[in-house]
Length: 260
Image 1 (tube, rainbow, N blue to C red):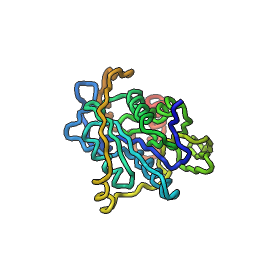
Image 2 (image 1 turned 60 degrees about the vertical axis):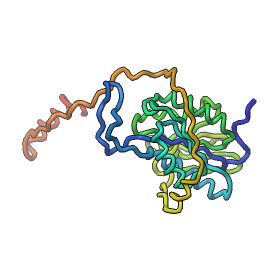
Image 3 (image 1 turned 180 degrees about the horizontal axis):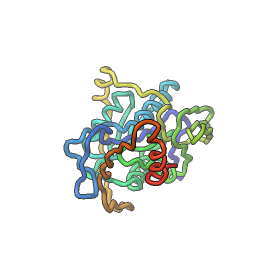
Image 4 (image 1 turned 45 degrees about the vertical axis):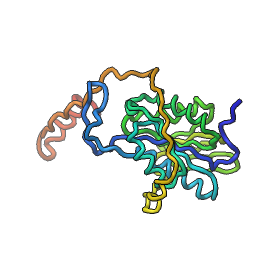
C-alpha cells in the first residue's frame, strides 16, 4: 500500500484554478463552450481562501510546505505565480490546451494522479467551487478517489492532535463536523481574509519552482451538448399607483409569478 500522507499536518497541497473574472462579459464559442478571446482571467476567488488557510497553517506550525496544483492551459502559470507570491513554496501545472473545458470528473482524475505521485500530503485544500462552472464537485471527487474524508464549505477550521474539527454553514445555522487526518477541505467565504502578494513575495516567486507536466485529457465522462446565454429579462410593468394597486399586484404575484 502506497502511503500518500505524512505524519505532520503542515505538508499541505492546495488546488487552484484559472477562471474568467466575474465582471467579464463572455461569449459562447461553437454553441458548447465559452470563447476565451478577450476574457480577463483570474485566480478563482474561492481558491484564495484555500491558499490563505494553507499559508496560515504552515506559519502557525513554523515548518512544513505548501504546494499549489492546477490543471490549466500554459497561461495558468500567471495564477500559479500569484499563489507563489502569496507564500506557497512550489507549484505544479498540469498543462493541456483544452484544460479550460475539462469536466469536473476529468479534472479530479488528473489531480488525483498527480497527488499520488507527489505525496505524502496531510491536508488538501480546495475552494468550495470554481465560479465558471459552479459545480462544487472537484474537491469531494478527489477525496473519494484517494479514500480520505472530505468536509465541504468550511467557514471555521481547527486542527489538533491529528484531528480536524470544522464548521460549515447550513440552512438556518452552522454544523460542526470532525474527521481524522489526512483530510480534504473545501473552503468557503468567511474562513479567513486572503492576503495580497507584496513586492517581496512577487520577487521571491520568480525563483520558486513551478513544474509543468503535460497531461492527456482523453476519456471525458461528461459532454456538454449545448450552451446558451440566458433569455433576456422581460420589461417591467407598472400595475397602478398607491394603495389601489395592491390588489392587482397580489393577483399578478399569485397567478403569473406564482410566488404567493
